[in-house]
Length: 370
Image (cartoon, rainbow, N blue to C red; front, side, top):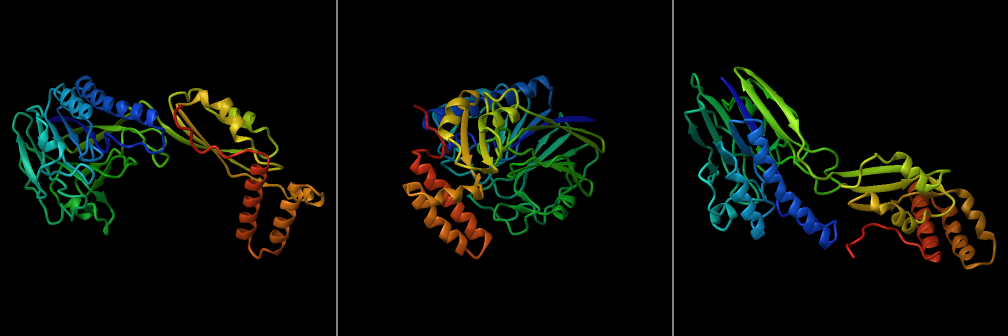
């Protein structure tokens, strides 16, 4: 019997988006809620048999009213059973949204830190799962084994950290997965997708987060479409993200920075959040303010960082009688007396920042909304 599963995790709805200004952060939270509608539409279009949310669907128990409303409206559009295994951010408690919201009847939330099961006789499926009851959890899968039954597919929905023995977030080993008696184990917690894996006879995966929220979550993000057929399993990654975070390094040695950036930029960046770091050797600090003014319209949000190094020739300007020269002369003395490359690098950085201040320039790290 073939079984199609939509596996998602780590949506972190109502994330603060601290790296953005207040206006754009609010836009991003609204776009996050739209992920729920996309998941519901995908469940319908792909004709899945059930949906598994493996934890951290919410970023905390302090959700906005609009998020709870969208959660109810979107989940009730999914015409198949939906299982939620609360994680370390959205752990189950009496005050959690999962306890307060009146969710549709097709939704099952695991509320115990002991693994329990739900029977779906029409599908020939038994779904196992457990919940975090606090921000941390002891090993929830340790010592657990589900009996195998002819004609019944065993599925696990669980938030935890696979391969991290000392984790405080439900550490899970491959040996425990192999001994679990599952056909497929749907995990969450790690934000970088695992791809399809196997431990013994058990297939497992975690999809990562479906949309990046910062520069530690760059590139394409996905939910997983799983198809089980007998002893075989396939996984298809599907992108439902509205925006991406991308980090790009640009070497501006001997080049005009604006032209160097444009040469490397992909064609379509206007919906994305970019951090562009300038590297290489220059005679003077790049004018980041001017660069931002020329580039910001090409992005939803842009951060510029200057990590260029001054060419040694810059010290030649220390010979005249200007404020710039006196400043460089003092630093050059320290540079020549430095004992390590690290010290010399710090002094060069000080020269770069000092020259930027003398020239009334500044590094552009982030721009809040007007």
